[in-house]
Length: 259
Image 1 (cartoon, rainbow, N blue to C red):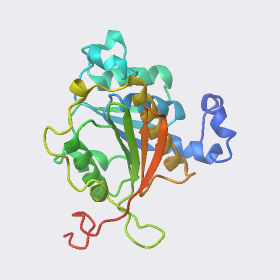
Image 2: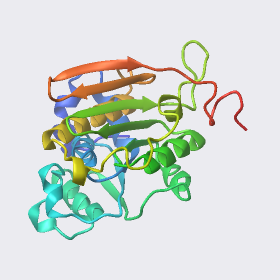
Image 3: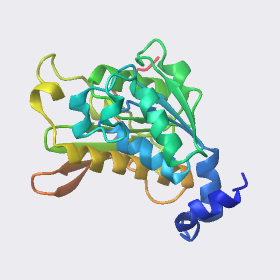
């Protein structure tokens, strides 16, 4: 996919990178990425995907902007309070990079509509804030055979991994699913929501940017993805650690007993 004169200037700092170059930037332009959630993680993620030149970005979110969002959801501004997040995010992208097409999905993604939505895109980046959505999205990505970049936030910690459960690893074994890493959601009420527990605003920016980096690397085709590795960030000590995990033969999607 050819780049216009404007795009060549806009993406000049990518084009001189040997790992990206013209072919990688063309892959970014041709890509269709679905972002689940235009909140704390989705805000910086969407901004950096748009700045990088992802050709089509879909945004799924059924929420509206509230004043308490603005401490971390930096794609929205004070005048956007009360607006649908997908509309506010789309306007921000248009200001940043008019070459990017935004497809707004002002719905809540769930087990009923996830496969249909995800099947329209090449890759999914999940920045949702609840386990029900994460399991619905990760299961749908497996069935739709789509890569998934997924992250989560705590008060002062975050985590990030890439799921390519529809593929096999170098050893010939299946890649792990999200359910290999987290077989079951925590008991109801055991994880307080952000409104009760709080979250460090800048941490959302760090994790959302890391998500964007993982998406960009996957699309452009360089680096080693976080498949089978969980990146954990501790903002209190500024510590980054990686936990390895593997395919669990008991998982219900690709395990030995899967239908």
